[in-house]
Length: 438
Ligand code: FPP
Ligand code: MG
Ligand code: MG
Image (cartoon, rainbow, N blue to C red):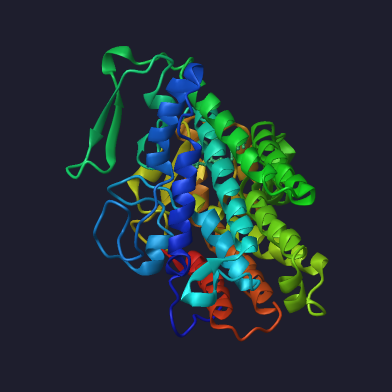
């Protein structure tokens, strides 16, 4: 995939809108005086500061850190090294996709003021919905995984028990929470921790559906509710794999689509559904693109694009925070780029190992024995090292990235600068994701 001549900073194209959405998300998790949920809501508020924060401008590493890495690396950061913060990846893709389909951010109104079109505001709600569901799924996921950390800081389930005693450390400007610690004298037992996280996730899901219901579009609601079903299905598939499924690339791809791609894919599909409802957008695309085609494109482009991101993040990283302990992941140094870690979920056989198993069938028995003993893990890593598993995974990601870029290219011709820039940004994100080594 060729790199485009002029880099586009995807984030800067929609920075104001993202900031808006971040405020709405924060407002959505703040208490409305429901006393029995008060504690949870307070936690959610703090959690929102952790997870939903976004950089105020595109030229800082994150909201709290003033270093200047490459613009796209900011956008694609797994984590700011020093501070936790949400990437808002899904809203970014959704909003870029909206502009790529010519639902413009603003149009000049009389008197020189800029009005946000009603349709654009409705599409922002999809972005809001999607991020809330994503965060809810992470809250639940950390409970299922009994994770200690999320985005470099203590996960909500690990710092919160049922009775809340915690210390909040705030930075010098009194603007950001820099640490959240539970009173060490009152750490909840492992088997009870997470209850608040589950409720917090449920609460976010409920609020997200209030946002969705406000759009009064049953078709879009049905599509998005299905993507929630997919999240759960993917997670169940992951925890109940037979040995055959464990060795199957098809099963892996399906599970990954459900777990990682369906939500964003269907959010983009919903953009297509909603745009069809308005006269002006319909006129613009009429005769050039059917609704079905739009739906397909959204699915192909976003499904694969996100698949790539997740896949790539699953296998490569430089941060030691990606090393989550022996029971969760295994670690290996990427032979192609020394110093970078490969992180693979234990028991959740991912693409590099599936390819290695194709090359070395004897690896099947090792995987079947389970990846919970250090000796077994070492053996798997040994096989992985001498196989082409990582290279083939990169090729798989590149193949899907090409499909994604081609799909964007095949959108109906449109000379508008913003439309062009957004399409450009979507392709650029895809290229960067598969080419990045950090
Ligand atoms: C992260 O996976 C988790 C997901 C992508 C989805 C988790 C889905 C559920 C828990 C189903 C419930 C869904 C809702 C909406 C409540 P990971 O554990 O592989 O990655 P990680 O490193 O980010 O933890
Ligand atoms: Mg997890
Ligand atoms: Mg998980």
